[in-house]
Image (cartoon, rainbow, N blue to C red; front, side, top):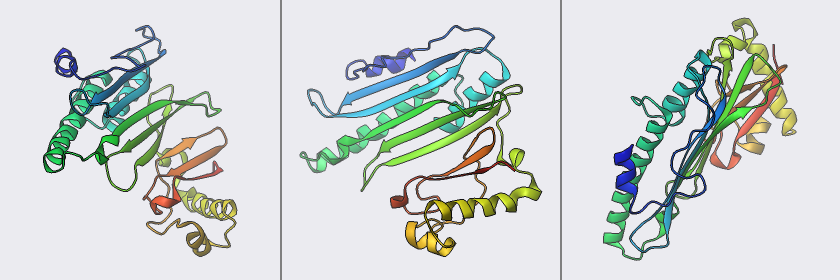
Length: 254
């Protein structure tokens, strides 16, 4: 980590979230804290244009099963890098990887066109925090990735994770919806989406919204488990074109 900060020290401006920070006491009993990293790095010395990298993830202290499992998910599935012991190390490695890639692209583009500025809007922002679900035995956690990496538009991806507070287990949709109830829930999803969009049937729904144009509805593991209902979320391009945005549908728990 010292090496990482030394390399960046000449060019990195740490904004409101500062360098690294972990708040909350390191106790066996989990308490909420936050791991954060924020970088606005000039594209060249003296240039006012910057690319932006920011991570803000609520974390649990302690070494219990729930805190350990949440940390593993944040490292491996949200930051999506393996082989690092802590969330902070994973954040540093991801930021370093992004900067290395972006700097190479910047150098290549500026060598070809010194006036090139399109890519200097580049940003990569990951957020994560617990979500109220009305269920005292389940911890629900929401993450988001908001980024622009060139092209016609940026990307926005939301993920939900649900943990059994007693065991720390990450719940799969099959833990919530028994096999003999799957078709019932699928029909409820279809009916609710048609109701939400005032569509006569799935064909009409597709024509009005683009939903199912790129893929069929299914029991995704991207769900928010509430006390008496399940919110399913499909991200852009998953079952519909980008213009359809995020698609959510809430049905009763079976």
